[in-house]
Amino acid sequence: MNKMIDLRSDTVTRPSQEMLAFMMKAEVGDDVFGEDPTVKALEEYLANMFGMEAGMFTPSGTAANQIAIKLHTQPGDEVICDQTAHVYLFEAGGIAFNSGCSVRLLNGDRGRFTVKQVEAALNDADDIHEPLSRLVVAENTSNKGGGSVWNYNDLKEISRFTHQHMLAFHLDGARIFNAMTWDGTHAKDYGKIFDTISICLSKGLGAPVGSVLLGSHEKIKKARRIRKLFGGGMRQAGYLAAAGLFALQHNIPLLKEDLRRAQTLAKSLAQKPFINSILPVESNILIFTLNKDFPSDTFLSILQQNNILALPFGLQTIRFVTHLDFNDEMLETVIKVLNTI
Image 1 (cartoon, rainbow, N blue to C red):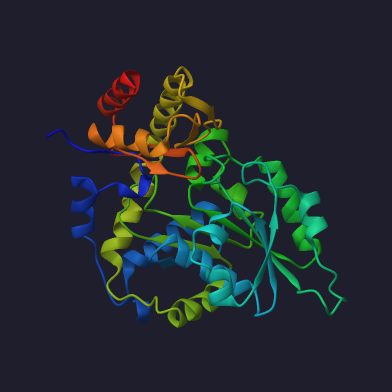
Image 2 (cartoon, one colour):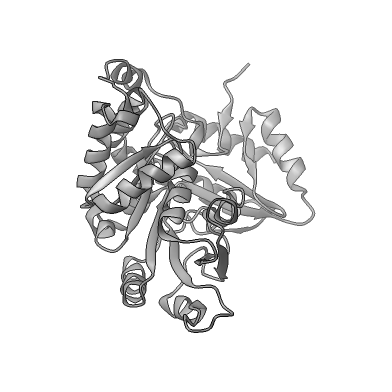
């Protein structure tokens, strides 16, 4: 049987032999006591990369985002984000459950909104009937937006506005390195304009587990208490942190190959009569819709019969995500299968 080709997500990658060897050599300690040197090295590495003061290792991107939301808000406050934001759609209602906040949803462009939309959504702090607007969250790249990349100048404008109005600004940077691969921005550019940033290591970078929340010394000190409150204290986590360090030091340049392969798949799909539309490909995510007379279940079944997995992503909508474990030979196989449909 041929090896399964998994295009459901970039979270399906497995550590390379080199990454595993690096993990097994990690020096570890008790992270709850602040004594794991590899965890500390990862946190410092990313903080320095983004020009921020401190970092905190977390088990997942959802954990990092939810800790950040709790960090910036009080129960009864309101969070402003796009209607397709991961923190709203895919984190199990955590904004309400963990932080007791309501959400003001913006109708952005593939997950990206403008400073004018933020301004229009801002509640009157003197009106006791309205929740206090407290936090704005941006996601880069935007998952539901088809891996869309924010214009950095738009983020700068929103940052300027949020700080003028005493709002916090958090970046869900789940695939921020994919964004930088697309537009040539640098990590320190984002560190200058956000109060906190969550960085996921288990997506395009290929680590098996983990994210890091970045911010000021004061914010990260408070975030550690919230992580503990959420049940996220870890012990000898350095073996996992080592995977993140290896990924950051070796795998970022490989993201351009994920982009190339996603664009190649998009070009192939664009020629197919059963395709209704394809979102622009700016990173490793490819989202497309099928014609109404070709059920998505049928399409996915054909792929699976050919040892290809993909993800349903809405009505007649499919998502492909390229990643480190998806190579050119697999790309050719997928294109051959698509050509038979």
